[in-house]
Amino acid sequence: MGKLYIVPTPVGNMADMTPRAVEVLSKVSAIYAEDTRTSGVLLKHFGITTPCLSHHKFNEHATAAPIVRRLLAGEDLALISDAGTPGISDPGFMLTRECRREGVEVETLPGATAFVPALVNSGLPTDRFTFEGFLPPKKGRRTRLEAIASASCTSIVYEMSLIHI
Image 1 (cartoon, helix red, strand yellow):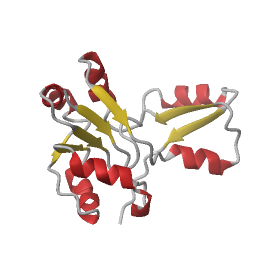
Image 2 (cartoon, helix red, strand yellow; image 1 turned 60 degrees about the vertical axis):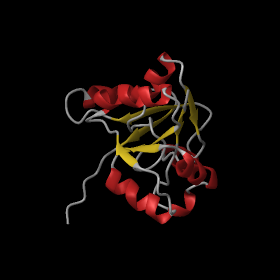
Image 3 (tube, helix red, strand yellow; image 1 turned 135 degrees about the vertical axis):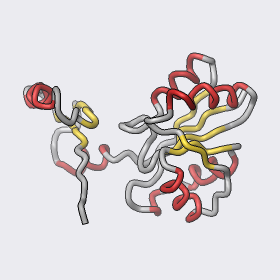
Image 4 (tube, one colour; image 1 turned 120 degrees about the vertical axis):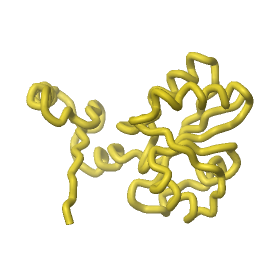
């Protein structure tokens, strides 16, 4: 039986890629990526020639089972996202859950996650915090914000901003 590696990728600075992450991505049979074009830049930068396939929020229902079959057949595979740790506001949860259900080993490498440096840098209390990820764009957003505002701990919320040039 193979192993699924969850591999964090840099959030904005290629120098944050760990040597272990490069080693794992170089030795697995295939890498599943949120966006193969974005990941292609990263892989090329580190000289990684491992085949890169698509696994993102729009196809993860269809790709999870075939990936698990490859793992059950003995292949080691990796999952990466565009930036940070897969499964943290990025695809990964569903695949990890299916691997666990099938008894496939999942190993998550330590590495970049956007909210940890932001939390530590904020000067806000870090002994208790909640991570909300991305809020709903419309329906339920105000209600969720009101609930977050009433919490007695530091809250982390991701916000997507679009830059128009």
